[in-house]
Length: 87
Image: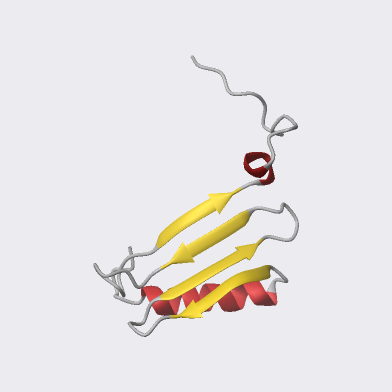
């Protein structure tokens, strides 16, 4: 939550940082209500990040994210952190 009502500005700054860090930007939209939708792939790990603001409720306040990893996308190999086990 962007308590200062600056979700779009925060995501715009993050987009600039990602681009300067050679992340591959896969979504880049500025919305009419001040929201921002961005997505990128981190170049070293291949992890993906999607962040959105501009929803009907709190368009400048809320940020929602989705994160993906290569093992989530293609679970053909074991995850580097090991197998899941229950206590």
